[in-house]
Image (cartoon, rainbow, N blue to C red; front, top):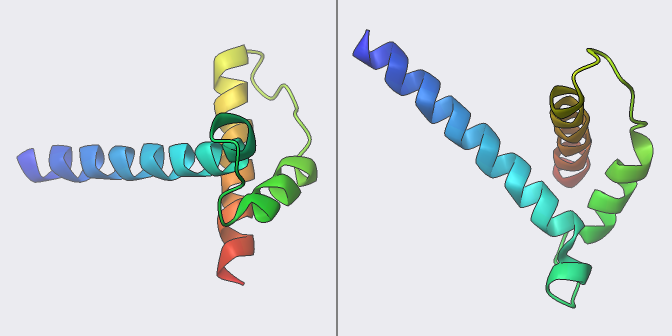
Length: 79
């Protein structure tokens, strides 16, 4: 049971870190005054995914939207 909890926590931390990395890169020009490497890919991902209310729960819908943008961002970076 402890191993399953550890795997779940590790997965959650990895997903949050990936999402935060995308968000900082996407907003680096505003936060830092300079665009970080990957900024153009983040902008393309931001414009590629339209926001939709899937569940009607605003925070969950925002999380799903940002997660979809992050997936497009990392897919674009790996190509």
